[in-house]
Length: 303
Image (cartoon, rainbow, N blue to C red; front, side, top):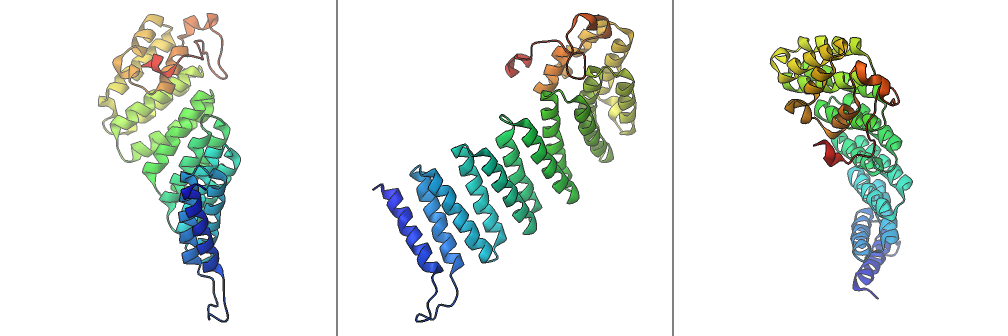
């Protein structure tokens, strides 16, 4: 027998013993704390021995012991550990369920940031395989941090949601998300961040063919002190003007500015598809906008 498996089985025996009660030995209550510790040791041994199914099950036993003992934070940690094992086993739905349960328990135990991070991990599981589920989880995480006034975390989740919406060409949802972020940073007067976000917002609105909304968003950002002095403010103004006048050459020049080339990959992809009105006719459309371009281009091609 593998030494690690033997060690795990020994820990399992100790855990079972800790849970037993005995009138003769005057042990009237199970020792949940000791049992949980032994189960956690066993889980580590099983993982090291590549016995992932056993590892998952034992982490869940440890979680039950912690819950019975009223130690919610550690119960959540064990469920989170079990979720990670489920991911390795390819049990994605089970992983999502356990990670969301862990997040709920973290929140109940008074650690909302840890709860949000558990949801963040769950969402990342699904980003490559099921973006809709990832979006659902990020929304739950966003609601949690907004309720507890965690603005930094809220911004991170809004940003991740925006990226997913752009990948799926859900431009209306992307606009709504970016607008939330812009408002957050206007409130704290971070002009440079407002500039970057407004640039992204205008790009998405132009992709939807809505120059009026793009200009409205641009003008709204001037409420932020210092926005007018950012490089983004100058570029956005020129970009909207070129779009509205159908000046394809000037429009392309704006998109090729170094400031624009430094945008995140999702926006660089968008710029590849974005066309000035005069050149729209020959392009195939996106879900909401006027996209063309190769959908299969590698992310490195946009740098």
